[in-house]
Structure formats: C-alpha cells, structure tokens
Length: 257
Image (cartoon, rainbow, N blue to C red; front, side, top):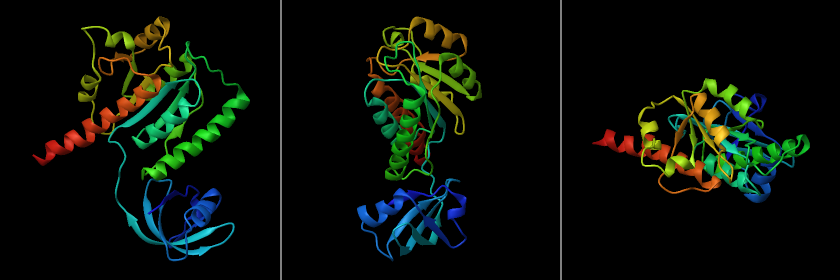
C-alpha cells in the first residue's frame, strides 16, 4: 500500500482523514486510485493508519480510518547528519538515501573547504526541494516520520547546537590513515537506545585542520569509517547502515539466541 504523510491536525477526525495538495494528484493520476482502495496515512505524531478511500475529487481525497498500526520502524537512536555542502546534486542523494536508512534530521554545513555557496534566495528554494525529497523518501521506505532539515550553519553555530546531543563525532580521514584510531564500532558500543548521535561529514575536501581542532576542543570525537577514504556522499550512508546493523540486526539476532 502507498503511504502518505498527512501532517495537518485539522485534516484528521476520529473516523477519517482528508488529503489535499500534491498527494491528491499522486493518488488520482499517478496511482490511478479509486474509491475502495486502501492506503496508509501517517499522522505527524508518528502513528500510521490503514485507510480506505471514500471520495476522490479534483482538490481532495477523503479516506475512512480502518485500523491504526503499532509498527515502529525508526532507528533506536536519533541520528542527525551534519553534511558539509557538496557539489552538484550530491545533497539530494544524501538526503534521499539517508532518509531511507533512518536519519532523524539533517543539518547542512558551510565548511571551510565547501566550494558551493548558498545565498538566501538559493537556500530557500533548496530547502523547499529538500523537504519534498525527504517526504517522498519517507513514504517510499515506510518511515513513521519525516526527517527534519535545518537551516545552513557555520562552524560556530554547529558547535552551539551540538550541546543537546549525547555523542558527537566527525568523520576524519586522518583517522583512517593511522594505526592508533577510534573506530565507529567503539562509539556505537557505548550508546544505548534513546540516545542522540550527531555525525559530522566534511565536503569533498574533508575537514580542515582548523575545523578538526575546533571540533575536538568541543568534545567531538574523530572517528574513521573503515580503512578506506570514502566520498562525502558515501560517508553518511556508511554510518547509518552500520548503526542499523548494530542496533537492529545484530542485537535482534543476539536476543533470539
């Protein structure tokens, strides 16, 4: 069943939900939906309901609530990805795949070595497009929530917002080149369900020495993601996949034994 996020409280009643906007076009034109078809509708509180379409018109779709679902598919820890601005459309890819892999939120970061420059006008348009990307990726992957995309931050702003997190790390390529390093696996072993993790990824040129020192001074741990140097668009996906394996697959298998 196709999933839709219906985030306005006034769209919901005790018995049904009313859908407006682009989702109406998707249901009626793209999916060729008909009265009687079933869809999944997500409330902004994270709960999801199986609904049966009762009405389709040009501007709205109404569906009756059949059954509320209790399934929670979110990662056991809240992961925020701080992504140094990459070139081209790599940010689109990171947001889409990062959403599919369970990221809780994303923070674009203007790194010292970022080539890309966002002015106010460009940033507003990009954030609108990014919002659409993570919404569609959340629906496709049957998430319970849509990740939050924050405004662009500087190094100073990043350090200020980092205080709310339980663990703060940054992927540092110099760690991958040494024999004495802190691995990502060691960081995950120290974490428990419900904790908040902040992962910082540099742009194509990585973090500068100045940035690395500032982050270390503010309790960010430099870690390596394996012995190889990863592209900026690969690093976040490596981290999220590792987190899923550690907290969902590995621990689930241990509980079975």
